[in-house]
Amino acid sequence: MNIILEFFVVTFKVLWAFVVAAAKWLMRPKEKSVAGQVCLITGAGSGLGRLFALEFARRRARLVLWDINTQSNEETAGMVRHIYQELAEEAVVAAQKAGHGEEEVLPHYNLQVHTYTCDVSKRENVYMTAERVRKEVGEVSVLVNNAGVVSGHHLLECPDELIERTMMVNCHAHFWTTKAFLPKMLELNHGHIVTVASSLGLFSTAGVEDYCASKFGAVGFHESLSHELKAAEKDGIKTTLVCPYLVDTGMFRGCRIRKEIEPFLPPLKPDYCVKQAMRAILTDQPMICTPRLMYMVTFMKSILPFEAVVCMYRFLGADKCMYPFIAQRKQATNNNEAKNGI
Image 1: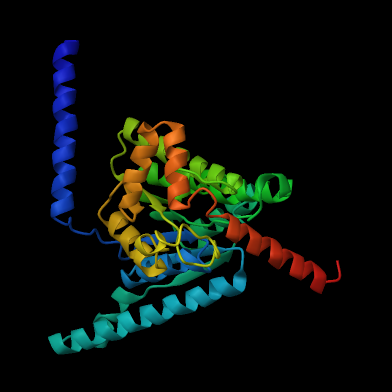
Image 2 (image 1 turned 180 degrees about the horizontal axis):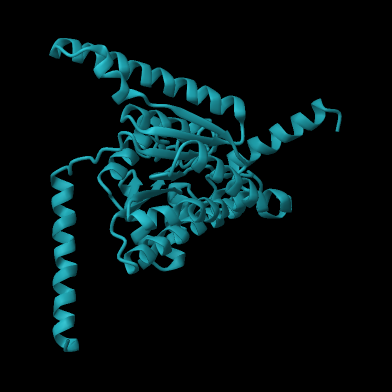
């Protein structure tokens, strides 16, 4: 095709993409069903991972929960089983009203949750656990890479081992889990890979160099994977990148921006964050930033001079927002050492 003609075709496609995006903004797309599909969530024992598990359970997905903490993972599984039981009871009541017998309904709601203790920072552990999942549960259709950690130290005070662990859990683990489950998705041309990153994977702040690096890495991995799937024309495999602002899970307890600004940009409620992410996942939205202001911050960071960005950070109190959090972590560490007689 003549390059000039092709240029006009590409221009039209780009403009049409804007039209489609605007239409989706105005008219909420229909959510797809994940009922009966195997959904694997890493870091399911607490925080956002637990809430993702409950949301997928309400949509009748079969859950596979991974976490390094066996007890908290089992607690999440107990909550999921309770939801499954409620769904089964509602189905029985609905069937009785429709004149069907209980035995005709229950098999359709025979959902199970499976728990596995897995340290996603260890490649061999991921591959071994993935093989167990394939044998005991089946092939994974929805993969939610959610597990995350934070060291809470300034760079020069942070032990190398903690830096390595942050990178392993927050970034490298995405490679291992995806390599474990993507081949079958490619074979079937069906699946969904969700990367739970952070707004700190789009722009950074002081004092959390290892965390920002790991989240930037996760974002880069996700975007490159998305392009690879498009290049392979595997349109049946969807990807969603989740980049929330500070979420009130306790992970960054103590983090503060300027007090006059904080009422307008408070930490996100975990339930709200996950519900927004679920809406994006179930409508095959490629990326979701919560709140929407994060889109503008990312755009401005891309076009403004660095010194202008620094001025904005200082005005918002975002330049040192992590310092109170790091101080609390340091105090807690000192208290533990004193308590243990170290």
